[in-house]
Length: 527
Image (cartoon, rainbow, N blue to C red; front, side):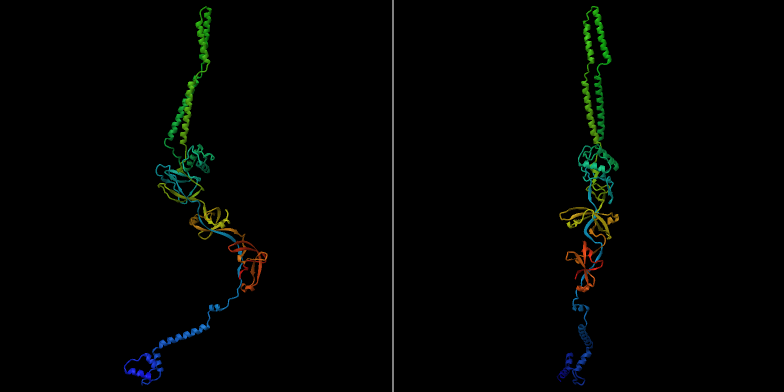
């Protein structure tokens, strides 16, 4: 055979036969005869048994997978290949419970009306040093409190809105004087008639009582003021003495003749008459005596005339004018010494009491700029609402907000401000009293606020909006399923006419008017 021959020729030449050629030649036996191709395949199988076994397993597995793929079907494939089920009715159960329509806002919680405080130091010649009465953070500042002690002098807190901008003393007038009088009256001190805007004696007395209640002496007057009062008092006394002396001079000068002088004048006239009579009886010349008699009569007449006291009166008038001037000087000196209120020793705050949020100074510091921050002692929630939400709110409306532990805490709308440029309206709530530790935890936090603007009176039946349909007469009704909703159009249903009430959060209150309706009944909302 040719193949055998080819193998023989290779042996004769000494070349190694290739495996491929052995397979194709089919091999020869030991005698050199060609036995059949099967003999070569047997040698191949014997030499590569592991490979052939692996191949055989793979072929069998492939064939089995093909067969199983034709026979076995997964549930998903079965469902995909199945036809769509008949549609059923979409239903929801009728709810029974309280229903409310809420406005939800976000608000910041904290103490109201926070503001930084600065203190007037213009009246101090040198540095304004804080010497005491520094409040602690969280302390309450109320009327007659000492906000700070500066250079040994108090800063007294009084109720008011107008800042102190000048020293108030006797004689000055203005709205700040009215505010002082009203503030004194608010703390139980008589400061004079608030209808008068003049700082008068009563106001000065009120200021003296203010310092007395604060526990500090009244401010010292300007240097030399007390000496001026003493000198003025002495001037008044001297002028009054001059008046007394002048009055005595006038009185003395205006008294006229005494009884003795009148008697002596009358006696002189009577004596001259006797002498004249005796001389005439004796035939003597009595003309000289008559002349003396006329002079005596004139003297007697002078005694009856009022005396000229013009000089003494002039002296008295001058003395009285001196007294008036001295008294005016004394009043001015005394007024300068009356109690007054420096702008640096009073701090007006509205909406007292206030809470100290932070303090920027300590004892020994020079007072410059802001010394502390205070806020109202009232806790409030401040939120911004849209115009739509605001229409649902009014002062006194109740609300709740969430505390850090998730519980709800009551609050009340106390103020609805005007809308700002963005159209948002400021709404202020006053929470019910909070424990101090809770307030410390939530101060400055932004919280969720719920305001029920409509609520049912107790538990009611309610269904989704989608469950309502309109009847031929415009009445509202719901379709109640009595059978199996999965039966679709074949399910047993009935129509119930209802009266609607409050709508909230996609549900509406319903009351059956014709037919029965109860909690848990299934109503159709779609199919």
